[in-house]
Each structure stands twice: as structure tokens, then as C-alpha cells.
Image (cartoon, rainbow, N blue to C red; front, side, top):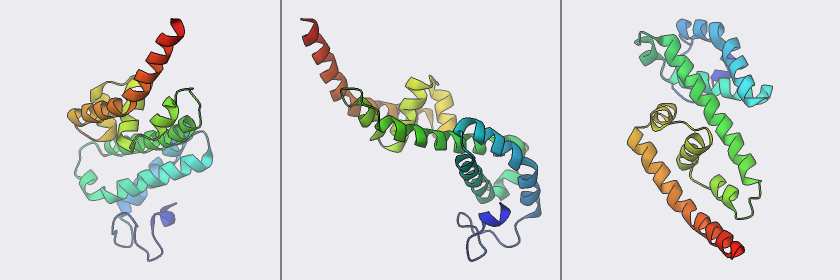
Length: 173
């Protein structure tokens, strides 16, 4: 997998990493790859998706390696990167499944068509029931940015909600 981190030119496609890779990074990879893979597999369900997520996570870790080494909690920081990567991959798969479901009013398709950040906020807030603080941590944005994306998503979805509510009222009359 370490060789997979490098592009055809011998450099990381994410960060211009000098060759050879930092020894500490390789050791960190070898120490954590199996646990990261098992974690990703438990969420994503297939070996291919888990490998893809772990690969993306280690590319991100490599990109920030110098800064991560300066942290007192390297393991915690790299685990956070792994969690965010798995959550992002999981949300992507969920988004595709959601768009294929028929709600009768087009809600699921509309959710699937939201911009990525709006979609993530809506899923994390209304389906996963996370609070703003946790959503902001997962997404790496401020709580006010989470609130902004949630408000914008509700604005995009409100015509569907109003139409469904109106139809329901008409059916009861």
C-alpha cells in the first residue's frame, strides 16, 4: 500500500512528498493500517471500499505529516482523519442509494441533489441526530458554517415540504 501512495513520477499525488517517504510515516502506516482497514470495513461493508477509504486517509495523513508530528497526540489526530474519511465515503454511498429511492414527492432525489456540504449536514443532523458541535468537528468547519449549510438545505427542500403538506391537507378534506 505504501507504494500505492506514490504517483507514477514517484511522488504523492496529494502532497509533493520527497522520496523516500518519511520513515516515521511508514512505521505509522505499518502499525495502523490493519486497524484502519477493519474500522473502514465495518462501516463500508466491502473490502474495496475499505481499501479506498484507508488509502485516502493515509494520503491525507501524508499531506499533513509534518504538522501532525508536531502534535502531542499523533495517534488521535490520525484516527480523526481516518474517521472523517470513512464517514465521507459512507455518506457518498448513502447519497447514491438515497437518490434511487422514490418518496412519492421527490424528497430523496432532492436530498441526493443537494451540494455535498448541505447533504452532509442534513444527513448528520436529521438522520444521524448529531449536534452542531459534532458535525462541525467531523466536517472540519465552524459551527456557524454548519448552521449556514443546514439553513440553505432547508431552503432548497422547503418547496417539496410545502407541496407534500398541501397534498396531505387536500387528501384529508
